[in-house]
Image (cartoon, rainbow, N blue to C red; front, top):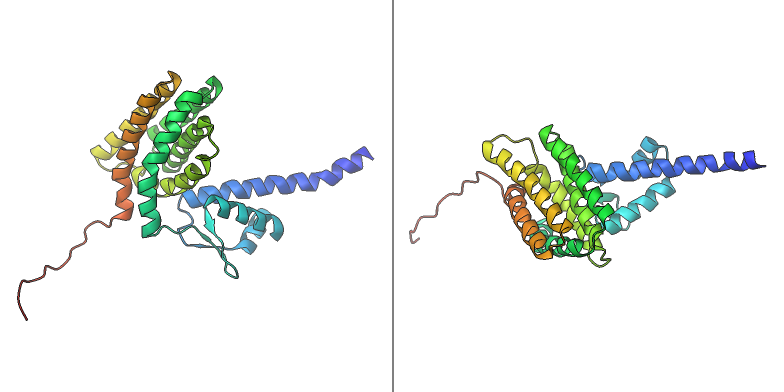
Length: 244
């Protein structure tokens, strides 16, 4: 009987594992811009790719929609969350407020174990920069700020931070692309140093310094991320001051 029970549970365990893999894969594809904003997500294709039935795929779609990764509308296919003017405007207004608040709270509430975990993420971030691994840099930066958010221990801020990090990662593909100019490499080096300084401020429980550091860190990112939003090289014709 015990053997039968074990064999009965095996398919369920495999299904859970496949759903977890799909969950992680979709998140990475969206934040890594493999799936562009507004792109259609085909449930049937995903179910076949990951060996799942439609119900667990639909359940995952609802979860990702609640977190802001995708958009669900009645009688329409799921789509990757768009990045329009209004959402970008809201992003740039909210980002410094949320990052400063979570980082300051992290300095007050983080445990030694959580700080040790943050240092491990930072080591991975540093390695990704040294190896010019774009995908890893974006992912590690996302995990760095998410870990700080968790260290804040505030259930009201976490949903906002999670939503913020989705678009930060997508636009961060511009900031964390392989450096092509000396100033871009200098910015990456500065970002890495700022991460180290933020960790140090959190570790010594200096909430004010942690807030100031993450604000400067955000400003560095903002300057690069606006390259995603503002088209470069647009030439507009000049209007002549003539009366017709």
